[in-house]
Image (cartoon, rainbow over all chains, first blue to last red; front, top):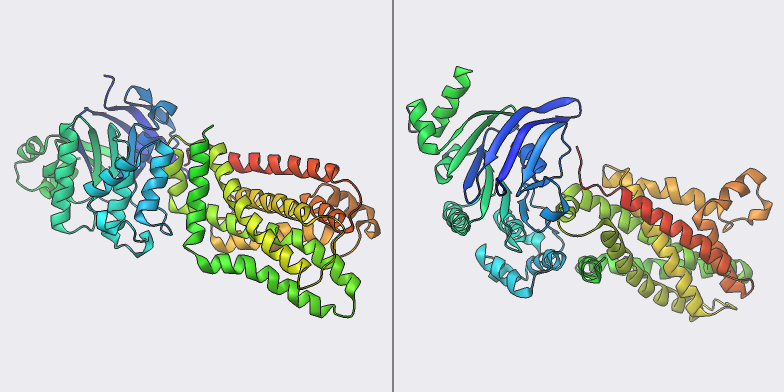
Length: 235
Length: 242
């Protein structure tokens, strides 16, 4: 498998504490894969290790055919961090222009991503004066620059209003239809239904994986929360 | 190495400054104010003013750029923008050169204004050229910037970063010959001062003021310090962390 992401026997230790004891997972290309789990379950750590910014203790991570963190991947992954890593003392458009310049992207692509996240009318606004949701969308826009094949999105829809959340999920599906791979973390179980496949995570271990429908069927319930609870109680 | 990415980074930093007019005003007006105060503090000791004010023209840019970069890069480290950048196709060297370009330009503007005020209305007399004074000020500013990037990796908070000013730069200031000639210091202190960059920054400024002595030796040493510190600064930028 050249595309997608494959993680094998991943172990991550931080400050002497084992965050991820042993994780193996396969992410197929062209899919929206949800990484679901409560806060502290290791979602961000796993995403960081795929992007290549997290030091790992053991195991292998192959991303689009290259080891995680390879030079070849630097234009091919879009990364959205929970804390919206943008320059708050710059305007929206200045933020995007800078990241576009680093990526070698044109002004047109800047306007494109602004439109995708619906920030065109805020483009001259300082990022510090944006609302939390707008900041998140600006950070998402920087992740979309250059049309990366793999999008790693760490809780991209937290705190957004329902209409916007629906719009963003529609955008994610359009991107997946174009063949992009999206790995999206969330602690909100009701976002699970919007993913093609899921990994349920707890304390750094994958409790289960599969399509939302299959997971619910196997737990005999309609609620993703119930699936999670029944899996935890089984172990 | 890509000029586009270096200049892009420099422009981004300058835009950040532009959105912060208070910092720009402080960067330029505070040294002018200090010069003016000095002038009247030493109004009956013209020689002392000549000596101190001249040397301070080289020290201000260093202090100011040190403060701005150490806090600025600390912010980049802690806000996640640095990590975000380093997963993109920008090299650490390009990042650092972007900072150097931006602060070189800022230092140029500061040096032009402050030296013009000092040489004009305040009546500071130098035997060397104003242009040379500005060149020395820019080198000093870049040195301050390089030290700032380097030490910011040892600070976890902005409080700590600011405290590095008295911890790292003030000892150099005391030993640089600005306050007392180095020849009158105990030999141990003089030897230590031989290895401190600020010594050569102050020495170069003094040479421009008196218009005697060659600057080559100072410039070569300052360049070595600058390259070493920029390299050390680049090493503190980590693509991967725990």
